[in-house]
Length: 190
Image 1 (cartoon, helix red, strand yellow):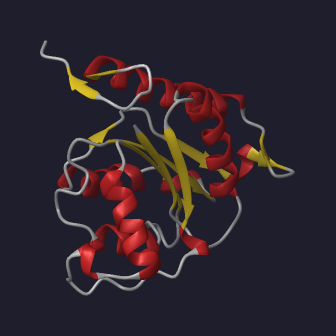
Image 2 (tube, one colour):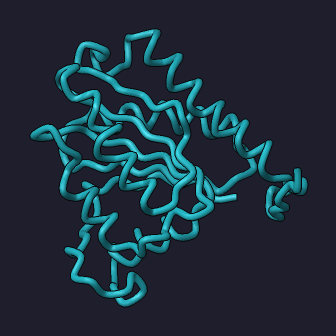
């Protein structure tokens, strides 16, 4: 099973700090899985021009192929101008419209104000739904006040992050059975 975390912003530290916390949770829940975190700020991704994702090269193709091969994806992003960052939207634009079919997708957002809590509902979830993701119901909204000295200090936020990863694990247990090496996927026929 392949688990992918995407840090979908190019500035700031809070989204990265949160993904680091989530990565530790993922390592506990999915210890035998291939877990990879990509930080879009560290990559040189081309602008989408309508080509098939396989026709891109370098970091652009690398990111697209990672997303297409993942079973579980956690997307973390910050909010700018009451919207998801263009770098994240560009990644979505690089992919085919069914790119998230069969993938379980969890999300969290870091924002400077509570006024941006609907960005997940009004922007991110519709994109993921259109691209056929199985969206985890629990998402996490995190404000500046929930951080101090490069740490998440809100016990509520930590609990919600824990719950999101636990929900992902429950969905996997319900939908799939794996052999001892977590390599073979069998869909339950309930």
